[in-house]
Length: 363
Image (cartoon, rainbow, N blue to C red; front, side, top):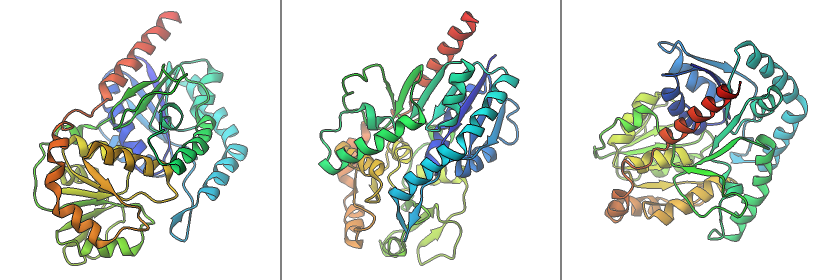
């Protein structure tokens, strides 16, 4: 048995659900120390608080997306990241090194968090990078519109701020384009799916599931309320229902249940949720923000699978949503090729186990 340190970006729940799947497997064999912030901390602390004696979730400072007028503000987000690197990361790395020493950590794993990679390098243990964001650097994206290719180049430079060097780089994505020259060493896996997802038997109970980001404009709520089907909305907190539209409390077990039993998904365009929906055979209409290049890229690749479609959140209309829901049959055959085939968790676990064995053999 070894001790593993895992860090992750705390923004949203995509990183946390990915790491949750990994911890569920690894805690059978090892002690796990998890470092994260904000949404990620609350999600994982709730999940592993009781009945998981080998897992400890610790809160650290982290970077969050910045919004202005309800829209993602890329410049403010970048500035926040630079301020974080200048003012907070030094003290965080020092603290992490002390923690690694105290608990004699053998291996570090990071999902797009900048502190632990620096601490692992100074402490002298292997680091495995498991995230989605490295696709910006490693994947051939020539099929995307020019603006998104430029965004991938621009934001891809920021990925270096998080993980400049890893013993192993793993990209978790529902899409697998060709790797760029110089990135052939990267390992590609599907989304990492937690037990609540892979244990479900899908069925169609006639409602739409919607997961929306906190800053979703009210006009999108009105569209969903008028779409013609019952809608269960997650991500905005509990509120009074609007006709057939109900707002659900944060409950990951119920969310997985509702995802498995919905007719279709209308949601933000995160890689993790898209992977979960495809695994369960659910057609998707996703709503990337124009300024959010990663989600826009996910949306283009979703359309390419023919398992769903998209429109920018700022431009979507009721007519488009109704058209999607009226034509779900067209996605049935492409989805049949995806159902039950998305989970990349076991591959990542085997890589981690191999690195632990190598490290301990050399110690």
